[in-house]
Each structure stands twice: as C-alpha cells, then as structure tokens.
Image 1 (cartoon, rainbow, N blue to C red):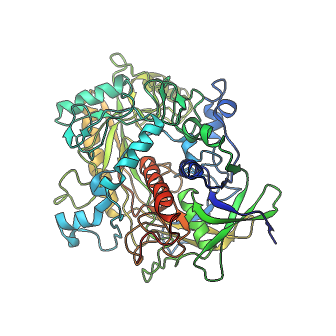
Image 2 (tube, one colour):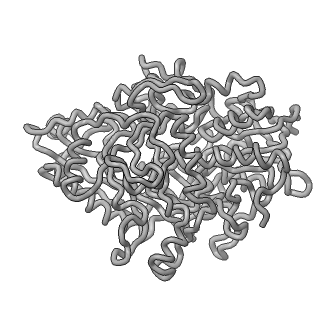
Amino acid sequence: MPRKLPGKDVVIIGLGWTGSILAHELTAAGLDVVAIERGPWRDTATDFPPSYAPDELRYRLHHELFLRPAQSTLTFRNNPSQTALPIRTWGAFMLGNGAGGAGVHWNAETWRFLPTDFTLRSHLTQRYGAAFLPEDMTIQDWGVTYDELEPYYDRFEHLCGTSGTAGNLRGVIQEGGNPFEGPRSRAYPTPAQKQPFSHTLFAQAAREMGYKPFPQPSGNLSQAYTNPLGVTLGPCTYCGFCEWFGCGNYSKASPQTTILPVLVRQPNFEARTECEVTRILLDSTGKRATGVVYADTSGEEWEQPADIVLLCAFSIFNVWLLMLSGIGERYDPQTGRGHIGRNFSHQTVSSAIGFFDRRKFNFNPFIASGAIGMCIDEFNGDNFDHSKLGFVGGGYMGQVQSNGRPMETTPVPPGTPLWGPEWKRAIRDNYLSTVFAGAGVHGSCYSYRGNYLDLDPTYRDRFGRPLLRLTMDLHENELKMSAFLTDRYAEIIQRMGATQVVKQPRKGPYSIVDYQTSHICGGAIMGSDPGSSAVNPWLQSWDVPNLFVFGMSAFPQNAGYNPTNTVAALAFRTAEAIRTQYLKNPGPLVHA
C-alpha cells in the first residue's frame, strides 16, 4: 500500500523541456508544483564540465545519458504475424533519462512546422483528392493552426536564444532565410551561426541549381545571449560534441541552460528525481485524476495527490502510462476503434555520401555544432507538386554535418575492406575530404492503421507491469519519398564537385537497430473531435479533464522537421490556457 503524501496543486511526470516549461509557468501563477523524474538530477557545471564532457566513448557509444533497457524497455515487431521481442540495446531511437530529458542531448535543431503540416489531411485532400492518399494512411489535422502556435514558437526561440535567419517576417519574404516558412512575428534573437566550408559549398551548389538555401535554425548559439528569464548562454565553440552529449560551454539551449536555474529557486517548486511514476490514480468515476503513485530507489511506493496531473514523459512512456492507468480507450487495429496507441510514427531519414579529391578539398569535419548546416526546403511537406510522384510528404535536406568524431566518423568508398591496413588507409585518406550527414534528408513519416502501440501480453518490467509493444513498418509511400528526395540531395552533392556519390535511401522493413532519429510520435494524438483523438487542442484528455498530456505523443503524424520547437510551443500554449481559463473554471476547455 503506497504511503500517502500531502497534496499538491500540480504534479508533473517528467522534467524535460515540457515539464520545465510548465513548472515555471505554473509556479509563477502561484501554484504549488512537484515534478517527479525517473532519472537523476543533471546540472551543467557538475555533470558536463569541459574537462570530460567531450567523451565519445562515454556518451556516444556507452550511452551515459540515456535510459538503460534494464530500467525499462519495450518490445518490437514489424507486423502482428511476428512475435514481439524485448529491445536489449537502443538503436533506431534513444530515450533520455534524467532532469532535462532529451533536451540535454538533443542537437538543438529548432524548426517550426509548416502551416500545412497542421491541416495535413484537409490540405492534401483538397489539392489531390481523397483517393490520392493510401487507403490505410490515417493522417489527420491537428486541431490547432500555425497562426495559433506562432506566438508560442516565438517564446521558445527567445527562451533559447535561437540563432537563425528569418525567411518570412510578418508575411514579407526575407533574403537569405527560408522562403517556405510560415510568417514569424519577429526575427530570431541571435544571428545564424557561421558556416564551415562544406556547408558553404553545399549552399553555393544548391543556389546554382535554382534552390534557395538558408542556415539551419540552431539552439547552438552564434553569440552570447541573455534570455527573458535573465539566464545567460555563451557562444558555441564548434566542438562537434552536441547530439548524445551535454554542453559544458553553456552554449547549447537546454532546460539546464535556459529555465531550470530560475525554476529551482522558486519556493513553490519541488523536484523528486530517481523516482518512477507507475500509474495515474483516478477517482471512483474514472473521470478525474487524483494524483500518481511512484516508486523511489528503494522500491517503496508513494502516493502523491494533486488537483492537476501533467503527463510530460517521453512520447512512448506517456502512452504506456495512459494504458497502465486505464485512461482512454486503447486502440484496436482490427476495428480502428480507440485512440490510445494509435498513429505511431517515426521519421524517414536518408543521406548520400560524397567523396572528394583529397588534394583539392579539406572540409575539417570536426569543426561543427549540433545544429549547423545550409538547408533547402523545396522538397519539404507539400512545397512541391506530388501529383505525378505517387507519394505524399517530404523533408528538408542540407549539408548538416554536425561532427567528425573519430570513433564513428569512418567514411570509406564502396569496396574498401571492413578491417585491416587497407581500411585504415582509406579512413586516413578520406576523413578530411568526405561530405557525409547521417540525416542529410530529414523526411516525414505519416501514420498508418498498422503502426501502433499496445501492451505486450508476455513480457513485464521490474514492477510487474506489461511492457509497451511497438508494431511498426515502413510503407511504400515513405520508401518512394525517401528514394526521390535522396536523388535530389545526391544531385547537389555531385554539383559540389564530388568524384563519387553513394546514395543511402531508406529501405524497408523498418529496423529497430539502425539509428534514425529519436523523434517517435503519436499514440495519444490531439484533435478537435473526441471521436478521432485522445486529447483536445489544449492537450487536455477528453476522458479526464484535469489530466494534460504533452510532447510528441500528441502528434497525429510526423512532419519533415525536428519536433522540439513544436513540442515546446504546444506546452507554452497549454500553460497559458491552464492559467487563464482552466484555473478559473476547472473542467473541459473544449466541449465535445
């Protein structure tokens, strides 16, 4: 029997970007807030000092910052005819662990989704007709528009000090920025980062081919910046240790470098780390959350009562906790009924490696940052005509080479032996003169009836709970898109002067081994109709009005961008609604 603690106004499950934003906004409103985080506390000065933060073995290969499968894992299969097996080592995606969540180890690519991404099904149906979409594709509109989110995109960018070049200021296209982006109310808070040689060469080649290249929006800052909360970040040193790493220079935006220093000083905020929430509690009606149960490091269980429950864990764990707590109707792929677990999606990334004459080109790939590069958006979303291509969706592409770390950066031409002196010579001869990017093409991944999350009938975790089961495969639409975009990307690499280009389009079936991105979405999707979504446009549960569910689990499908800016914008928007609407009249913010 859990030991019952004194009640709080708000309990937050998870202290990553969304948990930190919501805790700050609601403590500022005078609420008593406790955040419960499964992993350890992490602080920039003590956890990521420059003396050992750039440790490729520790962080990239041994996964120091990530959840251990022994703590919690999930099972995987491509389709229901297979038996799902537990994931023993993370591969296709990485799951953050500890204060700051995935905001500690992200690359800091800070994109806004396209306006049409939020009205996707309506837009594509209107342009191409409903019959153009695959029959089993379950994409839908979000229930919120770009214009409604724009002020909150702006808030997050200025919290982070995002470096970039505006492409659309209040409807006026700006030279040097992304001409396809939605209108923004003001420019980025800091200028775009300076671009290394290969990135500049990519932009030159793209421009010669008629494209409009622009610098990738970056949370790796181009200059020192003090954000609206009074927290100061420093300029990026281009060390190349961003993704998978914490930043000891205070130059990558993260909860630790933007918001937690202010939040932890609030007397009405408390963080409990290394405590795992095992379920959300409901009253006898099943229509009101009364708090949560969590276990500490000794395994002892505690009940934390609260008036409002905010579910801010990583996307798949949001879905898992909803299922384990009996909240909402679980998705049935046979009937299509239910919404908890529905519309799982990931990302469709690909690339092309360019080998250049080493006597003429020296790219110094180790001079880089996590979110650096010159990109084009001509083939993202529905920015191009799909009518004769046989697929929908797209992605941004660019020379976004974020590092040249020696253990993993071993580009060699096809035909090179896999080991031995010839392999070593090939690495030596090609390291400085090769253009490569793990996700040079960052493509969308749309949702399908057969891609979903549910509870595994066989395997259980250390608390005796059934593991979450992932059923996922790539579909013809995404494979066609990947092949088409990879060809366009390879054409630009060839134009840069490569002597050999090796294309790497995404191939099926979906692999749980090959890293793609950590942008796994869906399972508790948002929408304007309770008949087709788990949460309303304010991320409030249709079934339990004092429960709000944040993060990528709300995405009905995945766009061709990195998700963090959109995740944070939705959090800021909901925080404002809780302060200005919900607290005055607790209950549904949208009536079905």
